[in-house]
Image (cartoon, rainbow, N blue to C red):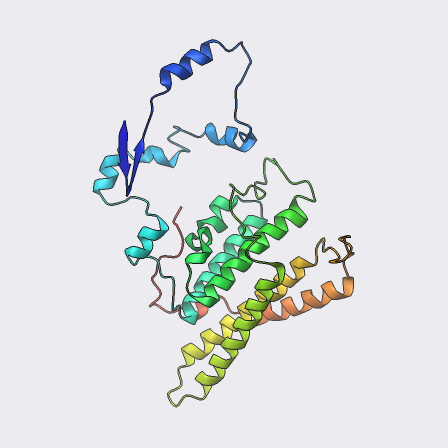
Amino acid sequence: MQETIGDTTYNWNDVTSKFADLCRHLPTGEVVRDRDFSLFEAMTALELMDPKMDGGMSIKNHFQEQKQGNRILTLKQLIDKQLLKITKFTSMELIHLFDQLLSTFHMWLDGHSLALTLFTCVYLHDVTIIDDYYLRTICFTFIKLIDYIRERILLKAGLFEEEDFSGTLTYNFPFYRDIIKDQTCLIDLKKSEDELNKRLRSLKHEADLNQLDINSTQQLIYRMKFLRLFYSLTLKFNEANEKTGEQTYLNSEEILKYLKQIDEMLQLIRPSHVIEDDTVSILYFITI
């Protein structure tokens, strides 16, 4: 049976009778499962076809949904239809994106699933499509933060298959470990700060001063510096000696220095709703 969804045509094979026949030969209490079928997948399976828990049950008919034009688009389709911006972001737009990412990052640290927090940002699904240097740097850094905190802190503490904490599940998401090295994000963040500072000085010397542009650029600089300091702090956990490979101990004075600088940046950052502009109306996050 063939079915076309979007631009993709699927060929389905009906295995119902074969599946039922195999089940009849299973002894009582025996279960056949995939190696990757964990407790999380088992609990998720209980939600399927339950109208109270399965959002898909609200869709009466897939083809009717297609006629209404409410279908999920791929990243390529979003870009082709100009629904997803990938270049020439204003400082205000970058601030909105940064604050949303930081908000979902906090939710993830609180134990919520990556699929319901950071991965709702479509840009994180394929950072390489982003042409804007600042946004690409921000997204790559958040991805590396997820990877480092999960590997160096959460898993070291034994937080896995925990009923009330699903933050360690990655859903086979690529973390660009071979592409982005530890120091790459730090270099890009510092470069972003320097370029934004140049832009800020230029804006202040323009004849027709635009206070909104000046304020938004300054706020973006604070955010980039905060992200760089926080990322630097994260790299210190379970840091290994490059020559010997042995784990190094945390330097309390160095950690306190980073924490003090991070706190100073937080005091300077103003919430985005205070400086937001009504012109920002671009699709950034998936609504859940």
